Image 1 (tube, rainbow, N blue to C red):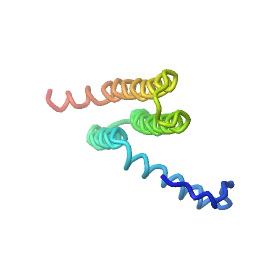
Image 2: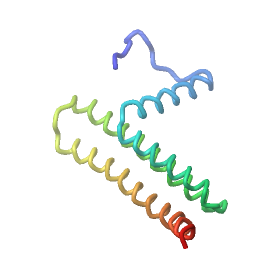
Image 3: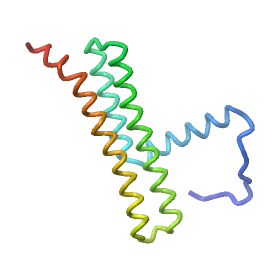
Image 4: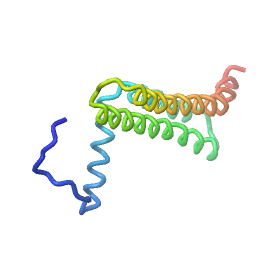
Length: 131
């Protein structure tokens, strides 16, 4: 990414600009991060499967919370990795590695939590189709 040094960094003057830059951020993380594409695919699969499972409102809220929480954690992981790389100028530093590993661990823990919640909600309903 090349920065235009003539551009000054200021607060967005219009709300629409905030949404525009947020959308650019979403498309950037989706385009550049393979793991984000995997999380989106799995999240959409869980939501589509949920459509056939007659979920209660509370179950839907838990499912959506988990899916979006994984998305948010993957975005934060990407932010942390990019900032660390910027600070260390892509050179190895043991503290930089620790920060990046911990950010990845946060995504992993959130994904495992989501898997447990999704399994707790969906598996009994799916098994009831076959019994």
